[in-house]
Image (cartoon, rainbow, N blue to C red; front, side, top):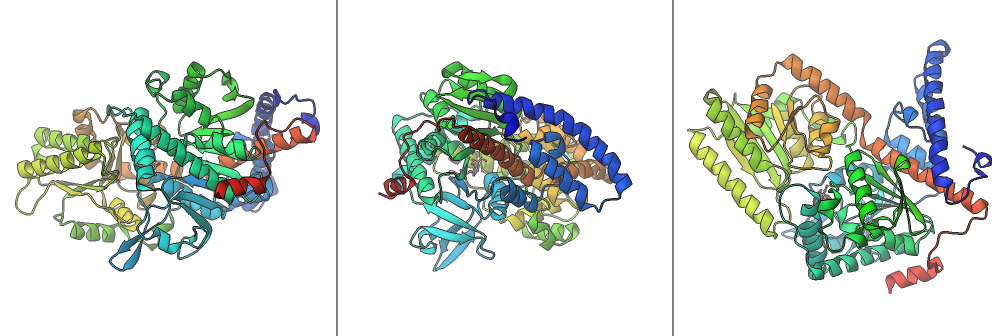
Length: 588
Ligand code: F6P
C-alpha cells in the first residue's frame, strides 16, 4: 500500500478504508499466492525463497492469507521489527517478572515463575532485545539490579533489559492480591467464585498502574515506543501511557477470558476499566468470543462508535482495534534438545515420585488455582475406579501444582481441599507400595515439568475456564516421540486449536472418567496420529506468529499515523509536554 493511494482518506475514515483496502489486497494476494505456488515448481527456487516472498507479500499488504504460509521463527519477528518498525523500541509491561532472584540461605537462587505469560513473552523479548518492566518481587531482586533498577537477562545469555518496579506491601496487597486477584480474576473466569471489590484496593490498583506508567515513560528512549501491556493487572495503564506518550503504539493483551457484559456489569469501576483499556491502539484476546464480549461491554457502558466489521472502537477521538491473537509457545521448545529420550524421563520421574513400575501415568501440571479444575479431575479418577475397578493398582495420577496467591482464602481452601481429596483417594484405593494420587504442591523447574510431560501416558488439562492454557501446548511440544494422550477442557482456549485432544466438560466427572479410560487404552498408532496433528498445529501457530501478528498490526497503524502526519492531520489529542519534562515528572 503506498502513500498515494491513501492520500484521499480523511483522518476519521482512514482506519475504515485501511481495513477495506487490506481486504481487497487479501483476496488478491490469496490468488497471487496460489499462482506463486504453481510457479515455484517451475522456477525451482531454493527452499528459503518462497518463504521470503510470502513474507514480503505479507509485510507489504498485511495479508493474513500469506501470513498463514510464513514460517514463524525468532528471525521472522526480528525481520518485522527491522524492516517494518525500524528504530522501534519494544517495551513489555507485566506484573510477573520473567526471572526472580530469591535468597536461599546466603545464596541467590534464580527462579523462572510458573506463568503462561512468561513462557510466551520471554522468547519474544529476547528476539527483539527489548525492555521488560515488571514488579520485582524476589527476595534478592534488589541485590541484582544496577542503580537504575535494571538487570540484563537471561543470566546465562544476556539479551534484554529487565527493569524492576518496587511495590510496598500495601501496594502489592491492594493492587495484586486485592483488585487484580480477588476482583478481576474471578470476575473474568466462570468458576463460580465470587469477586470481591474494595474501594481501597481500587485506589491502590490505580496508583500502581500510575507507577508503572511513570516507569514506561522513563524507559522510553523516544516518543514512539511499542508498548506491549500484559494482562488484567494493568487495565488503566494504556490510557495513562497514551496521555503521556501520545505517539506510542500501545498493544494490550488480556491473557484471561473477558466475561459477557452482564457479568462485567457487576464491577463498580466498569466504565473506568473500559476507558483505561481503550487507551490502547490494539486490544488482544485469545479468542474471538472474548473479543465479542469486550465489544459488547463497551457498547453497553460507553458512548462510542463500534465498527463490528472492522473490530474497531472509536472512543474519545481515538480508535482501538480489538483482535484475537491465540497465544502459544516457542517452537521447538529450547529445553527439548537437552532432555533425554522419553523412556529415560519416565524412569527419572517414576523414581523421583515413588511411582510403582508398570502403572500408567496420568499427569496434571499448573498453578494451584481454582480455575484449573484440579478437584474435578480427582473426582473423575474416583469415578473411573468406581466404574472400572480393574484399573485400581494400574494407574497413578501425578498432580504437580505450584503454590500461587497463597495468602488469599480461596487459594488456601483449594490447597487444603486438594490435599484432603488426594489423601482420601489414597486411603480408599491405595495398597502396599501403590498410591493412586501423588500430589506435589511445589514449584517445579521448566526442566522438571518437561520431564513429567515426557513421562506421561496421559495429560489432563481440565480448566473450568481458561484464556488459552499453555500446558496443553507444552505437553504436545514435549512429545517428539508422538505418544501420549491429551485430555482437554472444552472451556480452555486451546480446545479451539487442539481438536485431536479428547475434549471434555470438566464439570462432568463421568465424561472425564470415560475420556481417561479411552486415553489409557488408546493404541499407539492412534496416539501417534492425534499427537502428530496437534504438533503440526502448535509448530505452525507458535508464539512467534502470536507476537509477529501483533507487531505487523502495529506496523500498519504506525504507517497510517505517518501518512496522517504527512497530510498535515492534527497530532493525536493529548496534554503533550516535551519528553525530557515527562521523564522528569516520571522520576520525581
Ligand atoms: O495467564 C494468566 C496469569 O495470571 C498471568 O498473568 C500470570 O503471569 C500467570 O497467570 C500466573 O499468575 P501469577 O503471576 O499471579 O502467579
